[in-house]
Image (cartoon, rainbow, N blue to C red; front, side, top):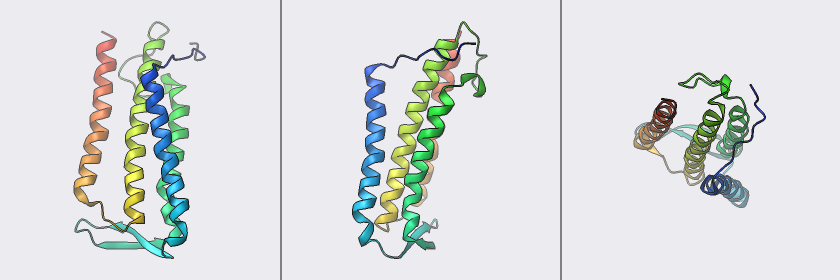
Length: 159
């Protein structure tokens, strides 16, 4: 199979990619701007009741931004190799373009969702605001729904 085929992105997809990058960039700039105002030790984890159950050094505020960067690189690399994904269809020469385009859109959507979630977690850490169990539940529902929607879309597109 030829994996060098380029996937043509629609303008809306490019906008989504730039918005996602903008959220990441704003998060990093925000951390840098607030760095000297952060306490040496800050709340790092909250239990279900919203009480702090773990503290960490100020450097822990960089973990969500680092995760965003790792996510960006991992997803960008993974899209290049669709036959290595657990896709709901068999990747063949005839459907390679469709699978790659769908995976690219899926990767953009997941990267956007996860970048937004990690940016919110970052703000919560910096402002010492517990995110709570509802946020966690809604986050999981959004992630699972995104995966299911794209699995169904890919399956229907191949019928």
